[in-house]
Image (tube, rainbow, N blue to C red; front, side, top):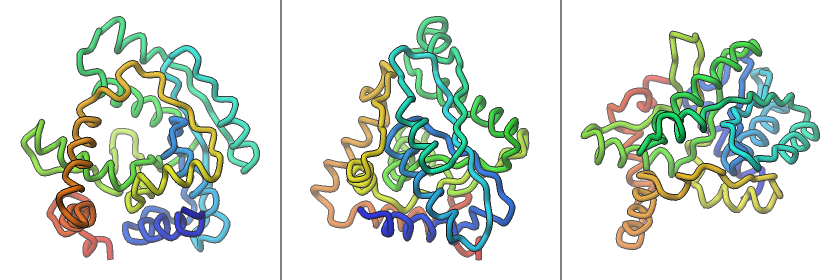
Amino acid sequence: MKLQRLLSYVRRAVDDYNMIEDGDKIAIGISAGKDSLTLLLALRSLQRFYPKKFELEAVTISLGFDNFDLTGVQKMCDEIGVRYTVKETDIAQIVFHERKEKNPCSLCAKMRKGALNDVAKSLGCNKVALGHNKDDVIQTLFLSLFYEGRIYTFPPVSYLDRSDLHTIRPLIYVPEKEIVGFARKEGLPVLKSPCPADGNTKREQVKNLIADLRNQYDNLDNHIFGAIKRSAINGWNLEKHL
């Protein structure tokens, strides 16, 4: 995938769901994975020509794992001209050693999101951008159905009144396989997750299930994604954003 194609996906999502307004200051959550680094490059590129003017901050919530060297991410931020903030935390210690969570992902995500929102507010941001892609949207629908018994997936834009922050997800139209190719082609400084649960989660199981279903049903992802956009799931109905 070329940058121009990535930007076409991102601009369509941003326009469809009114993700960016004049004067926004957006904190991009950087995990140092392929999605968040692709999002960083996409929004920095969009910033150069988008009619609505906005500012960017890059933020990493470090969970406290050893051997997590962010030098490459810092270099990338310096090269593209985005300020980079790293917040050190003891989330890994709490989740894995103190709480000894059997299903650590939920607690970790909540703590990470809370820390990210706090840093965003301290930097004067009014929005937080996350790197969820099209595959993540579909996987979350399956996870909600299987494990919670409800038809739900995260919305393109959400508002947290406690912190007075909007969360936006500009990569929702981008298939994961295209992000993989883009990150490789651009030589993004992607770091492997140091989390011991990585690759052994409910999400990974659902991801494998969907991969199997793709072999049986043509155009599966677009059918499911189209159903989500036409559904009554909160935040997804395009007519409400027009």
